Length: 99
Image (cartoon, rainbow, N blue to C red; front, side, top):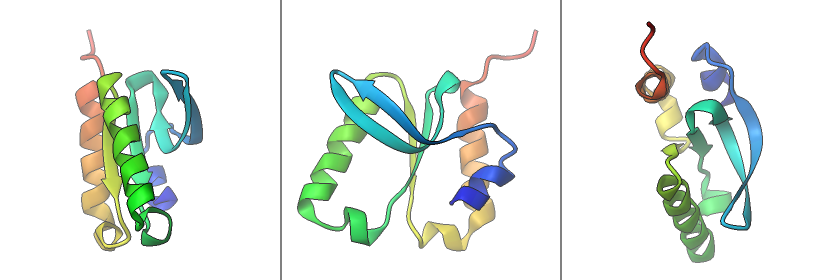
């Protein structure tokens, strides 16, 4: 995922710490100035009910606070160009048009 993020050409923060509504989160990849978050979801860390519930709660909280969230698994990364293009599109949607 890190390689895909580097290929976007966009400056991002890795393991970005964030506090929302008093709860601490660490986002896998973030462009904080644009409120864009990219998460790499693996079965080992996200495959149990408790982890899934926590992930969905966090995602809903991020969305509530205006973040765009993109989530990808190992399966998605078999098509890195597609993932990269989706991330770039999400970032461009958040950027202000040039004057």
